[in-house]
Length: 167
Image 1: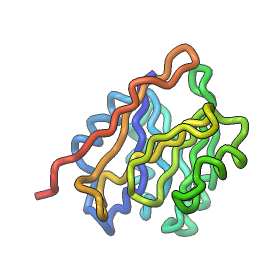
Image 2: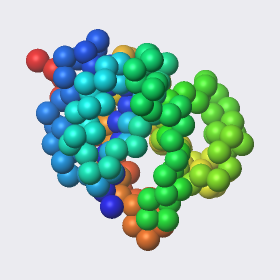
Image 3: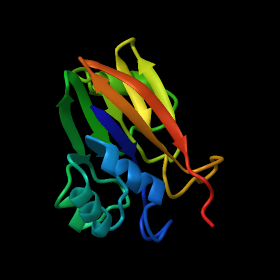
Image 4: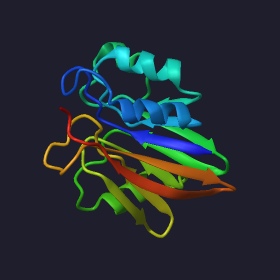
């Protein structure tokens, strides 16, 4: 099962539209995961229409229309791997301990908010993943998203993709 992980798209505030490379990955993915800060419902509508399966949450920049359609935390079991998705996890210092305590039943937690890619393991069991942002690099060298594979109860092939600068 092929996964596409993204967060903090901020369309149309940080970009007019999602990058073409990212949209091409949507077509290849079995599951698209979005960890919040969509900003507009048009992006949610687009990903719902193009995704085989979409798992998403709202973020701190998402207003009432998005909050009415998305949960604050989403849960899904994908081929034996227990996923959670949330926008904010708090400061990076202490993140692993905090998230392991908050989500003891999960194998993987996908989060966003910082726009900083992150991939770590808490307490030898909980994988914490932040795909960064495909539209707003902030202080990062480039905009990013991630892909991964799930097979036989294992998450493998987690890959960070760096997008070329927008012209």
